[in-house]
Image (cartoon, rainbow, N blue to C red; front, side, top):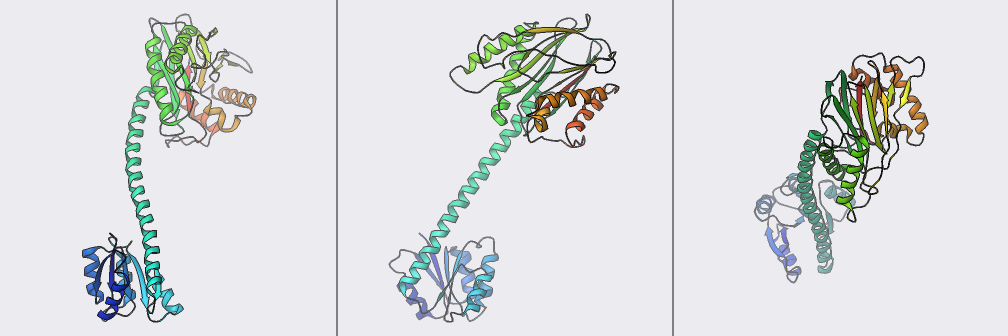
Length: 390
């Protein structure tokens, strides 16, 4: 039941207003002074106050201002009642926070109409505030879940800076959101072999993070069993298709998988729709940039897809850089040839650098206004790099 406080120093006037409202069902209180009104506002928390403009102890404008400036009563509606319906009086009442204004020689219908109108707005406002509180609670829970998902994902996408068989592997990961759709790993295999996997799943956010987590675990389970890159992608594709068949549409991932033999100094690789890595030959004169080209559908698109494989040899001093398409989509989404040219130029400039972290910074500066001291996020897409100093 809505509560109304009538603030009027004249008992006869207050009784008249009470009679006007007797059939409305409101819970009605009265106060004969400003100080008494303040006490009852705190005690009963009325929904609306009918405030007489003339009070014996304090100014009605000051009373209105006090009520509206109190966080506990700031949303209490105030209908200002004055025997003088002047522009200055109306403006001043609105300035101190009154919600509406009525001349005191009103009829009952007009008073009830104004009260009902104000209370209707208040009820809608209360509903919005309640929805906002509920939304804030849900956002808080969602924020906690996102942070947990971020921690899980980051544990599966480690910062890599390691050396194996004379090769130094260094990574950089920059999600477009707190959690992203890129994943990568460097997996030592048996003997003198080590694998590099780099992928990009469809979508962003939580669904993409769940898919990257699933694929990362699948790859870690499959990699020791199938040393051949084309077999690895074949089984990964079929496992993903078996999980999502007739259940979820548009769930796929682009994956590049390469196995390094550090004794024979060769790389065997297969590709499932991922951006092509680029190798820079240390001994080449002029344009020594070479793309590791291989064709294949993204995993999850079609069961029993076959993947071709290629073998390339390397020499000490060569440079190989893997990247996801977030690097190109920022400025070159519609001109891949231009991106390929500029990417190769950046890697040729990076070729003399000994530190892979400096190479990463040079690459990022070539495509972004990059500041290494910031934990940057890129609006267009997630971006991942793996630099291999061979």
